Amino acid sequence: MITLSEFVYAKQHEFSSATGELSALLSSIATAARFINREITKAGLSDILGFNESSNVQGEAQTKLDVLANERVKKALLSRGEVAGIASEEDDDVVIFEGGRAETSKYVVLIDPLDGSSNIDVNVSVGTIFSIYRRVTPIGQPISKIDFLQPGNKQVAAGYVLYGSSTILVYTTGQGVHAFTYEPALGMFCLSNESMKFPTKGSTYSINEGNYLKFPSGVKQYMKYCQEIDTATSRPYNSRYIGSLVADFHRNLLKGGIFMYPNTASYPQGKLRLLYECNPIAFIAEQAGAKATDGFQSVLTIVPTSLHERSPFFVGNDHMVETLMDFLSLPTT
Ligand SMILES: O=P(O)(O)OC[C@H]1O[C@](O)(COP(=O)(O)O)[C@@H](O)[C@@H]1O
Ligand SMILES: [Mg+2]
Ligand SMILES: [Mg+2]
Image 1 (spheres, protein in one colour):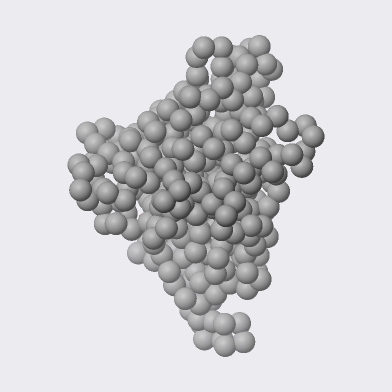
Image 2 (cartoon, rainbow, N blue to C red; image 1 turned 45 degrees about the horizontal axis):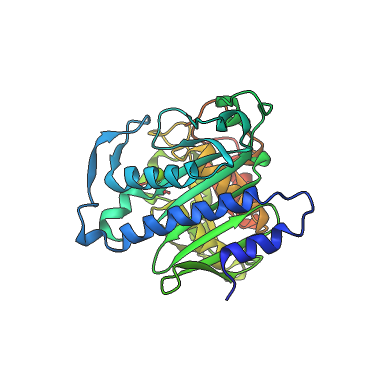
């Protein structure tokens, strides 16, 4: 068995310019994931379920696990020297680390500490999502919000942890997508899938059908296309929706498929957050040979203007995303 740190260090030595900082950062995220995993696996026995008496900048009620996971990830990243600051779904503004880090540390990290919050109390898979950038502010000057508002194609690494029947950490640094399964007896993440690729064909579509009447007509037409009977193209496709982005995406990464969260009447810009949900998942998807778009362009090319901005998000097998984009480009009926 190869552990995460062994694998990351071996990969690091493939690059003469590598300093080990990114490797160290990845292992601190794994440390935070181990703590969060412990809380999740015994959640029913502790008072960690339910809501906190607080809401985040997006006006969403925070669950106790949202808050705990946020604190855990921040603590793990703060304990390292590589990180100058972080931005989180659960914090209104960027958190700039002190002690000279803001001026000297190389990386900034954006996180969704607990993804799929609506599934926590019902024991359905949830996740943690992370996105890592190099600072743009020159060393010596303190970082600021601009260091976080970079387009997704500037990410140096991204990944997620899926707390499901087993706990898996999946990441990319632009050199392929690799997965590590948590081995409780060792207390470590061990390599379980190297250089992952989407299967060539997908036949699962994933969308909250309850919002059907609020969807753009192109999405409605594509859903009809998915439901038509045509064995030659493996249709009708299966419909699967867990309601945790990480879990829905991970299923499609393994089995093929498309995940869609369009703009709707309730979320005119889409629901998912560009910087710490769409971009990290899109980086992994494109590294695994799939496509990730807002319906018109790769989300990785979008230049963000605000920390918690949202975007329509469609990610999955090329052939499925392209067919969807064809429907989206039709004149609206
Ligand atoms: O309940 P809906 O509207 O289908 O939304 C589900 C989506 O919202 C999310 O739960 C949003 O993420 P958070 O739980 O991190 O806020 C995604 O994981 C999921 O894909
Ligand atoms: Mg989320
Ligand atoms: Mg969240």
